[in-house]
Image (cartoon, rainbow, N blue to C red; front, side, top):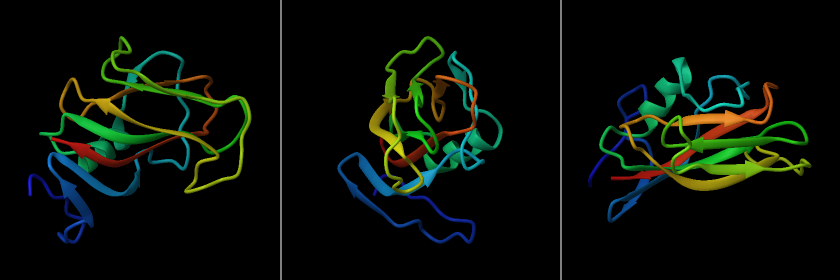
Length: 139
């Protein structure tokens, strides 16, 4: 085993590892149900950054993410390795569909971690409808 996570009671979080890839249950990163953002890349901050860092270990080189929206049409969001958009992955939609796991528009991707435990994000507008979750990582 390369890495494991503990919950608040020091119990192992359920996971599966194969090679350098670790898979876990989808974990919401934003502290609010849905977050408001800006249209330029910004580092995750505050509780959102804390949530990301407690989900993805310092030795991880990539994070498996799901990004998208939990409310509304024209929901577009991007996540990248730095504030220049290096390694950016996008979720762009003009209509919302049925909701699954809190998302009504979503895309799954793997984003590189240029700096340990840090990712940058931006979105189409400042409405609080953006979602970001992690379901694993690679070391």
